[in-house]
Image 1 (cartoon, rainbow, N blue to C red):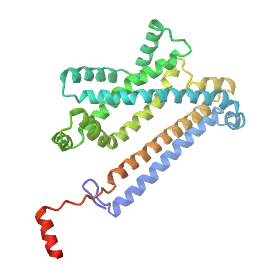
Image 2: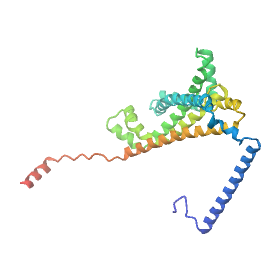
Image 3: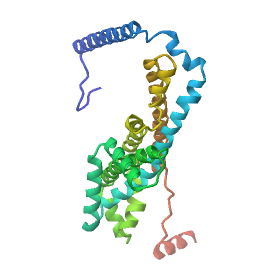
Image 4: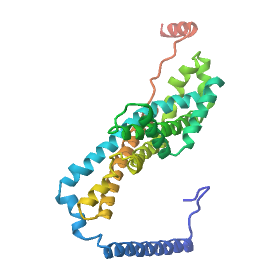
Length: 296
């Protein structure tokens, strides 16, 4: 099928496409063979490196599941705080008042420009110096704070872009009905912009889940990825096997999150396409008299 950006390939183009596919698969197979051979030479494919994840439940109950719990806890807290905060900041950036729009924009740009790891480290130092938060909970607080500050700023930009992508007539129609700016934003613009924003929001939620691993790298936060050190120390330096299992767990979590968001998006789109109830027009007095005479 031809389109503006794509032409239906002819016989020669089809042959080239088949040739490119075969060459790519051959190169991919060679790379996979080289990687597996290197792992085998390092004894990383031996059965004793992988069987603990199947035969020894302590790997899960002592290391992986507690680490997963900490990851989900930090991610859930960050999401619950970052989403509404990002929405508020995004609406603030759309304000007609300069004294609101400019400071909010400065805050968003400031925290969006700083790497998440630096925000976590600064937060940890602030909690250690100016608060009485216990050292046991300080890594969790620092991770959540860094994730909230960065991701709320990114979500604010997503909200702003989603609202601005709507046709201008939506806001004009609401104003013509006598709705105030806040009512227009809450009841007209934001509900319509949710469907537009949802893919970007889901991507940002996936980033939040993965970025919890930064806390385990330098702050001693006992999240999922940090459990690699304890597992490899107790089960024979099975680093590759541990990283593989942890990566699969991350993939499953993010796949579930993406699937739930996809179902939500489908429901929102179906809700918008639902048929509206037709309200019969009221007959004018002249039409009513004419109908009455015709009935007689």
